[in-house]
Picture 1 (cartoon, one colour):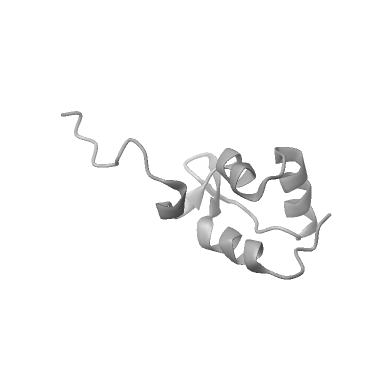
Picture 2: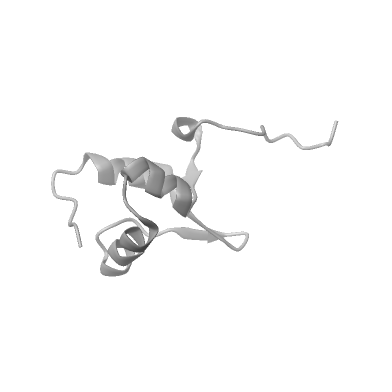
Length: 72
């Protein structure tokens, strides 16, 4: 046993934070589009944790259910 308690794979719908790659997969947009939308305030901002930019999954889910997504 390696001593790690984290599972090797957690389904996206169970994760609380998503990487840029995961967010792009979920929302169906490219990284540069998501980055531009973040910079204009049209998409939730990622948080920096351990040197990685991670999006709070619940914020992205709320964005997905909005009627007006403020597309850039």
